[in-house]
Length: 440
Image (cartoon, rainbow, N blue to C red; front, top):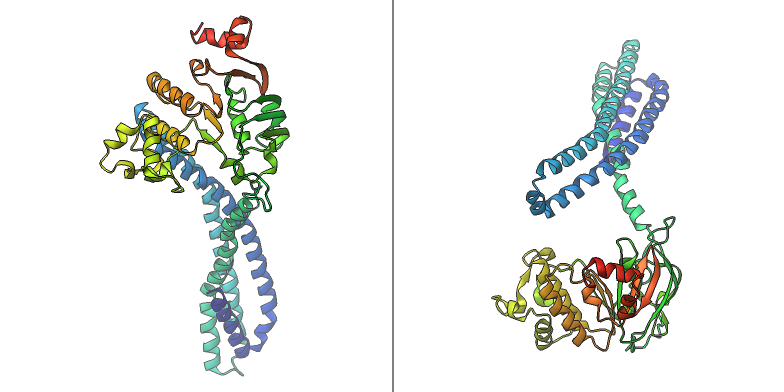
């Protein structure tokens, strides 16, 4: 389209020049003026488009969050606040969009001027040479000149839109150049097929931060969990408990030190090899659109009997049997047709199916009642009795029978011993937390 319009402009100028040869003297000055206007507009319009694009994203994200949290918003009767926030973001977007319209009008006035100059000189030179020129050629020249204003507007607007809209490609390119995760798989990997065999986890002066330039969230922690040990991890909010589990899966990379599992430095492994050999039951249960069976066994490697056994151990068998489709029951996006506690139990059943040598519980029972919590803990003790279990404790009573307890504070280990030993020391931080929880 741009090429076609450009050819029409060139053809118009050629017709005018042939009709009135003297017109060629003003083509260069008018072309320079036209190019200067276009360059100035495009540079400004491109920056304004960037501002508008950046201010548009929060509108969509806030709208999506409001839709997902509509029930909570209504429950707390804060609809007006969220409506106000949405309107404020739209208003800010319009503040960024309005200058684009003004710049567009500015361009239109200048292009009209350039087009009118072409008409002026075409008509002026035709009148000056009326005695020697063919009247038909004069009419052709002027009629073509009268059409060029709209054509020039289209030409500049199209070329400007191409450069302006390329901002979206720039943003994609920026995301594409964002630092990626480590390789999913490593060629010539010598990792044993049944690794880890024992589940021995060792942290050696391990440090981690969430992004370059930020403070360390784990500041050189060192401890060893022997294979099959059950270790509870406790600490106040912000102590670094969840950061420790993220580091085990290399969701955040090490800033120093090592994590060694059964003699393998996990930083030297492919992410698939590492994450497929560990199991986590997260604090926020994650489910996908699809059947219950797909959520439990996404790679279809287990039989129906295994799935029913896992559901029984997760105390979900009676519930799933009561569903019309059983394990083929459709789960909506995010598991919204199930309660939070049921979603958590499905995550437990998924972990029971995988049953790797290392299990991480990230406050996995925070969303269930105390009775269900006791059932889950009993299942974990029996089904994972030979596995290494790292439990981030939401309720201290869930880790009282652990082999050891790690107490974190500000990214450092302050205490690491058996729960009974720590409770005997009334000056210990763990004793203080247990006292606050009413356990001593």
